[in-house]
Image (cartoon, rainbow, N blue to C red; front, side, top):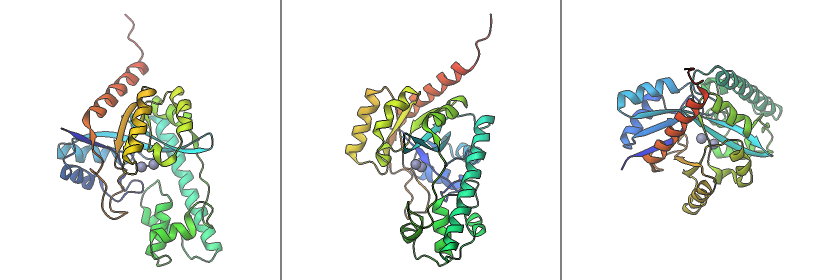
Amino acid sequence: MAFVDLHLHSRFSDGTYEPEELAAQARRCELAAIALTDHDSVEGCPGTAQACAAAGIEFIAGTELTAEQDGNEVHILGYCMDTQNSRLLTQIARFQAVRQDRIREMVARLNRIRVPLSADAVFALANCRAPGRPHVARALVAAGLCASLDEAFERFLKKNRPAWVPKFKMSGEEALDLIHQAGGVAVMAHPGLNRTDQVIPRLVEAGMDGIECFHTKHSTATTEHYLELADQFHLLVTGGSDCHGLNKGKPLIGTVKVPYQHLELLKARAAEIRAAATPHPSS
Ligand SMILES: [Zn+2]
Ligand SMILES: [Zn+2]
C-alpha cells in the first residue's frame, strides 16, 4: 500500500530541510508523494518539485495560511495551486511583510526589557521571507539569552508574555478564496489543535474542500471524530506529519501514514476547480 505525507515545512518557512533533504527523507520513509506546505510561502515548491522528480516521488505544491474565523485562529492548507498565480503571490508578499514587521516589533519589545537581541540576528538566522516566532526563539538560544526554545516561549514569546505581538490575519473565507482563485484545494489544518469545530459549518458553506484528519498531534479518538465530520459535511480527508525538520529533535516526516487514495480524491477535486475556472470554448 502507498502512503503520502501532505503537511511538511522546509527552510523556506520555519522548517530546517532544504528541498533535496526533504526528498531524501521522503524516499527513506518510502512515501509515494509529499506536499510542501510552508507558512505564507510557495517559494520552496519549484526546488522541491525538482528534487522529488529526481528521487521518483510525486510532488504536490502547497502552502499553509494563517487565518482567523469568528475570533478563532485557523490554519488553511492550500494544495495544487498555480504557484505563479499573481494574486496569490501579491497576497503572500503582503503576509511576509507583515511577518517581518512583527519580528521587528517583538525584538523592540525584548530590547525594552533589556534583552539585547537584534532584528538582523533573527533575519540572518531565519534566512527566509516568512520568519516567525520559532526563529526569534532560535535566535534567543543562539545568542545565549535563553537556555532552550521552550524557555524562550515561556519567558518571552507566548501569548501575553512581554515580547508577544498579535498577528494580522485574514478571514478564513479570504484564505479559501485566495486558494481557490489560484486553482487550489482548500483544507483546514489540524482542527484538533485549534479546537475550532464551531467554525467548520461556516467554512464548509464558504467552499472549504477538506479537513486534515490525520496529524501528528491528533489522538486516535480525535482522528475518528474528524473522519466522522468529514463524512457528515462531505469533505475530503487529508493528513500529514507537520514535520519541521530537525527543529524539535527527531524529524516527524513519515510518522503519519496517510493512504494514497486520499491524494487521489484531492487531485480529482483540483481538476474540477481548474475546469470550473477555465472558460468553455465556444463552438
Ligand atoms: Zn499549522
Ligand atoms: Zn504546519
